[in-house]
Structure formats: structure tokens, C-alpha cells
Length: 350
Ligand code: SER
Image: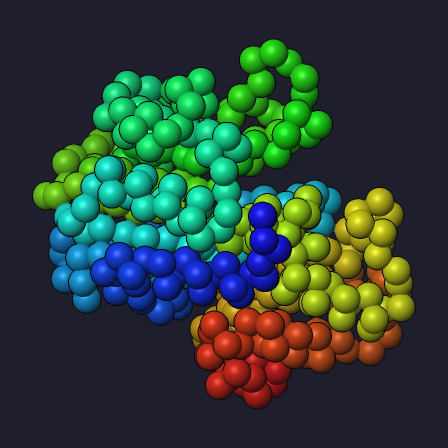
């Protein structure tokens, strides 16, 4: 596979869906609009819920975005593992009552094989229990029937907060036996590191109500999500998001500033280096969107990230302030895709 930079993968994705007649939307702010069920935008579909529900009219019935997201549920793992992060970007194509399963899965495979260089023998798919339609489509696309796995609600039903949700089908990349547990029935869903989920296609048909029940949406939709950092790991042949080109550039800044060497995760100081790298990305984007440190809500999340990053700077022995200086690296690598970082640079750093 061609070794593609993170920024290049993003741009290929958006261009591909533009060629399929999608409106290329800008990432929405990290601050949710008219949605009290979440504190911070945490997926590509979150800012688009009203389009799925039909209560607002989208710019076009087909849309694609690269959405900035933050998830802090796993914050205690950040730095300790190769793949946890609080900030990430999510690529997605969306249909608001336009195309459905067939087109979504077909274009997904076209993009992966013809534009990123994946081969079908390395791809697997999981489907929701009795979704025979999805299974039929996967087979017609040349997916090896042995590579199609049925899983239950926990794995193959997407819902977050209230509102639009539905069964999904996830595409997995087989990294090879050498990453596996060796069990004869090892497949997607196994706890080991062999199969990596790279793209979730959600068939958004239901709405989750406040009382926990599900109602039918007025029309079926498509919501897909591909974690950009994870895809960059695959394309760059690396195990860790911290080795992805754009993120590594920020990490190198932390190493330079602290004078502490990075050993790919083997040393306790590596944890601090990775925490600072991750949190720098999150806080730079959050402040650009107008979140201020405070004692509650989103502001508290930001305050916590700032304090953790500062504390780990001390652990590394950095004496002076350093987050402002290092935020330059976040702005440099992401400023083209997110011009608000460049426009608000002085504000962010102040
Ligand atoms: N909402 C789904 C996800 O975030 C697909 O976009 O995985």
C-alpha cells in the first residue's frame, strides 16, 4: 500500500465522495448546537442529527465531512496505549433519505480498493445479527463469505446519546496472523490485535427516545465513520497513532522541548510525552472553537486536559511554560484543513 500522509487521506476521501455527488461540508464546531445529550461533538454524525431526523434541511441529501471529535471516556488510558487519544478526526459520508446500504457499502469498497490500495483478501465485515441484505451486498462485492461475521447489538448497533441510530456493518482490516492470538476461530470481535476496525457503516433507521424506546425515522439514512488517525496507522504501517506523520510532528516537539528521548512506549516518560501530545491537539482545537477553561461542563474537560498536560510537562522536567509554544505545531500540521486554527492563533495562545 502507498504510504499516505494523514492530510492526504483526508483529502482523497472528500474528493472521492465529491465525485459521487456529495456536498463536502466543513467540520462543525466541537460545541454541540441544540443538543443537550452530549457535552462535546464525539462523532461525524453528531452535528448532523437534525438532518437525519428530518427536522432541518441539509445543504444536499448526500454529504461528506471530516469532523473534529473529542471523546474523554477513556482518558485514563491515553498515553498508556498505542491507540487511545481524546482528540480525533472522523471521515464520513452521509445520506439523508437518499441512498442506502447498497451504495454505501459499494462505494466504501471502491474507495478502499481503488483509491487507498486495499485488497479484498485483507478485508472482513461484521453485520448485525440477521441483516441478510447487508450480507448479500457484501458477497456481491466479492467479500469472502468466510470473512463476514454476524455480531449482536453491543458490536453492530450504533447509538450515542439520543436521536438517530441503527444497525451497522463494520469493515475490518486483517493485519496478519503475526498480530493474532493464534486461536483457530480468531476473527473480528476477538480481543486480540489482529483485526482492526477501520470503517463503520450505520444504517440509521431509528430514533432513540428519552424513555429508552426506539421509533422509526421518517426515512432511512446512511452515516459512516472512519477514524482518520487509525486509517493513517494502517496506511503508514504503524502500530501507534503517535507514529502517524502529523501527530509524530507534535510529539517530536515535546521531545525537543523536554530533552527527554522517546522510546515508542517502553519507558514511563513515554506516557507523559504521549499525554502531552494528545492533549495539545485536543486543547488547541477546543479553544479555537471558543471553549474556555472553567469548573463545569466542557470548560472543565478543557481545564482537566490543560492541567494534565502541564503536570506531565513537570514530570518530564520542563521548567518554563511550553504548551503555548507547542500549540504552534498543532496549528502547522492541521491549519490547512482547519483554517480556524490559523485565524484564531493569537486567541488560542493568549
Ligand atoms: N456514527 C458512527 C461512528 O461514529 C458512524 O459514523 O462510528
